[in-house]
Image 1: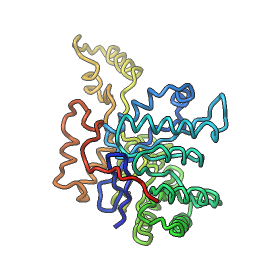
Image 2 (image 1 turned 60 degrees about the vertical axis):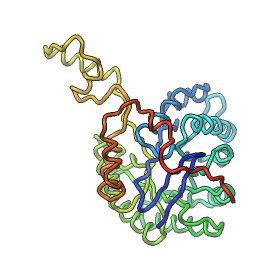
Image 3 (image 1 turned 30 degrees about the vertical axis):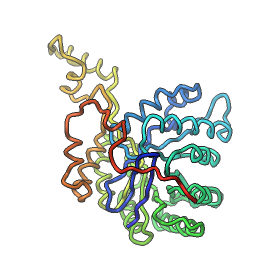
Image 4 (image 1 turned 60 degrees about the horizontal axis):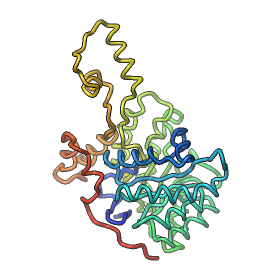
Length: 353
């Protein structure tokens, strides 16, 4: 049974066939987030700090860190991304002891992150492209870390699942040339949007089974890709994740957090209620108001996808006696338990080549 070990200085996350589903929090990533990108360029890390803590509190087992900002002052990521990656890794591992995933398309940024990361981080990523294989696999060997292997190569991303399987197989075989074991490779078979390709879901389920049975590797995906462009994306994601788990997927890179309802939405709802002639108690607080009218919460918390994952863990016998499910459904107290990171299995052994 493949067990991929990812560690911080004092905590271990295990990605495995007979392990609870591993959630890799994706929010520390400026791609598509103009506000975060602007903050990072100006040296403001407030959002990074809040995103890191919110994801851990929501149940993320690993935190992905991506420093891919295209600076207005310097558009060359080869110069700007490595030092930013160092800052982000140091910042996050001083906030929480949850293991990290070093995520970059810039080779120098990957190594910069590996040099300062404590424990045994996950590296994201290698592909079947020749130049990527030639640079990333030696890094994986040098730092003795596991790696995400994305199933595209120099020809791009194939819509044919058999081609994507062969790319994954090629990466596993090339890794073996460096004495990198299959259990240290987490394959991303690439989830296509179901709105653009009706067979995308079934493709992934078939691919995951094949990767597990024939290559013996763990798998991951960008979970929200499947619902891209569709209404009620959370509804699609909530169905997709347990189905992927049932097919054998062992982790996902995803947002575990339900974001707070915006002030604008609260004001709009107040206006609707006022126009309808409904009189509310004067002492009704905002949190009670948004819950009564189904707006969510004024506070961040675990998203519905996390609820689906916890339930699926229980149903697949990866939650002994339902302890995690019971804990998940208890009213939250301070939330500090998740942030301290002192529970669970201890890790932190030093990497050796």
